[in-house]
Image (cartoon, rainbow, N blue to C red; front, side, top):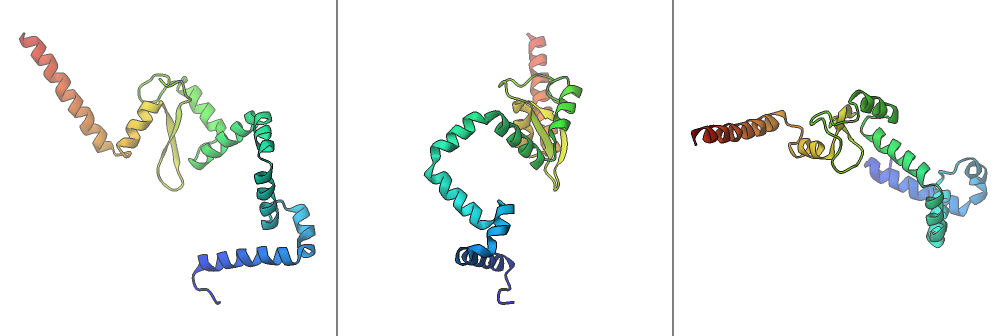
Amino acid sequence: MPYKDLEVRKQYMKEWLIKDQLKNPDKYKEKAAKDNSSPQHKISSRAWRENNPEHQAEYYLSNSEKIKIISRKNNLKKIGWTPEMYTTVLLEQSGVCAICGNVCPSGRNLAADHEHVDPPKPRGLLCVVCNLMIGYARDNQSILIRAANYLKKYKDSETTQGEQK
């Protein structure tokens, strides 16, 4: 094998295939007719989109709902969720955050929370504030416990000071 590095070999093969398809288009015509993911098709599609930007905007406007649904499904899939799971958990949580029990203050959908492992494991639905809180704590329980104790300490000292007056 001329390339010991697998990534270098893959890149070489990809470039070779594109060059071969450009030199011998008849060889790939039948396959390309069946397969829209061929490198040649991708190159020609990209060139067409660049030359016809108005079509892209028109397509998005006429298919925006479909695009949003597909995008949402793909984003949920990346973090181990499905749209059906999201709906089920949303109903179980009565449409409120699993931590604070409120609807999302920003008016957005609740965030699908997940463990940051491979593959991601779904946990629950959180409002943007609670999701950021957990993210800033880096999913570390001890940080959140120390933060709760910190708040409790100062809450207790306020109560004690109020009684002394």
